[in-house]
Image (cartoon, rainbow, N blue to C red; front, side, top):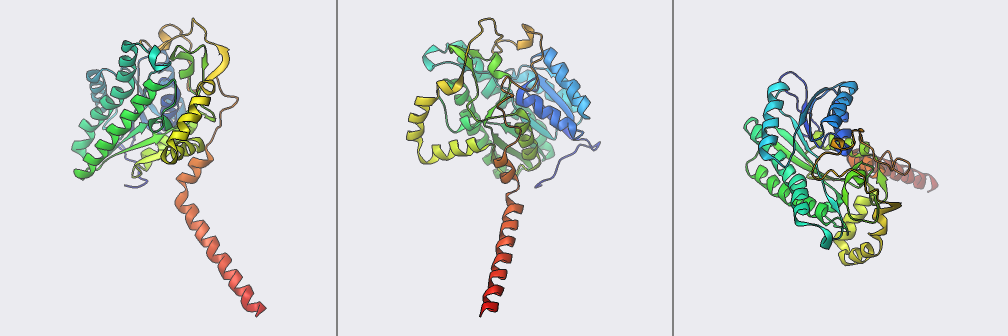
Amino acid sequence: MSGTRHRGANGTEVVVVTGASGGVGRATARAFGARGAAVALLARGEHALARAAEEVREAGGRALPLVVDVADAAAVDAAAGRVEEELGPIDVWVNAAFSTVFAPVAEIRPEELRRATEVTYFGFVHGTQAALRRMTPRDRGTIVQVGSALAERSVPLQAVYCGAKHAIQGFTESLRCELLHDRSGVRVTMVQMPGLNTPQFSWVLTRLPRHPRPVAPVYQPEVAARAVLHAADHPERRVYWVGGSTVATLLGQKFAPGLLDRYLARTGYEGQQTDRPVDPSRPVNLWQPPDDTAPDDYGAHGIFDEEAHPRSVQFWISRNRRPLALATATAGAVAAALAGGLRRRAA
C-alpha cells in the first residue's frame, strides 16, 4: 500500500476534509482538487464553504460542500453517508477542524473549554469514527489527523488547544494499535504542524491584550496541505513532522523538557502576540462561524504573509530521505573508489 492512492469504483479519489472553509483545511481541499479528487468539504460557515468549494472546482476537482458542526456526532455521520451517496466510497478522511481560546488557564470559562474541546478533540473523534464505519467493512482507506507540534509540547496561553491535540494523539495511537491487531487495511497517520499563517489568529477567542500570532517561524498553509497529501499517499509512517521548528521543539521536549518549560515561560507570552491591540469588534468562531458576523471570506491565509515561508526544507528532506540516503551512500562509495584508485597510482 506504500505510496499508492486509493480510488473509488469510478476511478476518482474521494476525500473528506473537515474544517475546509479556512486555513489548513481549505488549502488541503484545494490541493486534493488540483489532482482531480472529488472533495467533500465539511465546515460550519456557509459563505466561506461555498467559496472553498468554488476553489476546488477551479483547481480541477469535484466539490460537495456540507454545512456541518463537527461537534455533533450524528451530523458528521450523516454527512459521511451523504458523501458516499453522492461521490462514492470515501478513500481519504482528513480531520482538520478546530477551535480554541487564547488565554491563561485561570481566565478560561468552563463553557469555553467544553465547547473548544468538543470541536477540536471530539470533532476528530467523530470524523474518525464516521470514516471507520465505512472504511472498515471495505478493508481500505486512510485517515489523516492534522496535528501540531503542540500535541507533544505544550506552550503557555494555549492550554485548551494543547490539551485537545494531546488527546487526539492519544486517541490516534490507541486506534493504530487496534487496526494493527485486526490486521486491517485501513491506515491512520498524523501530521505534526509548525506555526502556520492561517486566519485563526483573526477570529479565535482571545483574552490577550494584543493580537495573537503563531509561534515563529511561520509557514504558509500550502506547506501543511502538501504534507497532508503526502501523508495520505504514504500512510505507512505513523507520524510526520513538518518544519525545522517542529523537529527542534519535539527533540527539546524529549531530551530537555524542564529547560523548555523555562524557555517558554520567558518567551511564550511575547512570542504569541503582535504589537497591535486586540480589536474588540473582531469576530469569534468558538460559538458560530466568523462569516455569520463578518461576511468577508477569510480564505486559507492569515495576516502573516510577509514572514511566512512557502516551503519546508526539513519536510522535503524527510519526504525524500530514502533516495537521499541512497544518493549519499552512492556518492560515498564513488568517493571511496576514487580515493582508492588515487592511492594505488601514488604507490
